[in-house]
Image (cartoon, rainbow, N blue to C red):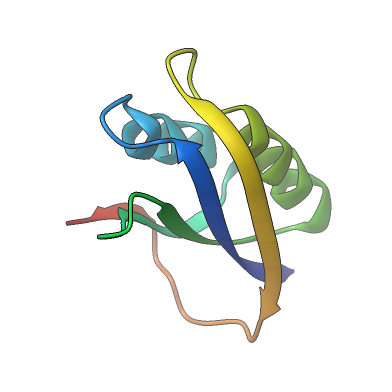
Length: 89
């Protein structure tokens, strides 16, 4: 089990990035959250088994078809107690 925080930059707001990220996380059994930031980036925290978490991170580097991801910063974090994956508004 591993937990990471992502900071995603590029054209990632207004392109269903959060909804798509949640959908992919749910498919892979990842728990955590995703939210838009005031500076136009997206932040996300994901927690899960190593292989599934890596698949999710790799997906975040692409995003949904309308998105244009420039970069994804990945930082390890201590494990928190998440019950599901949610969009924070």
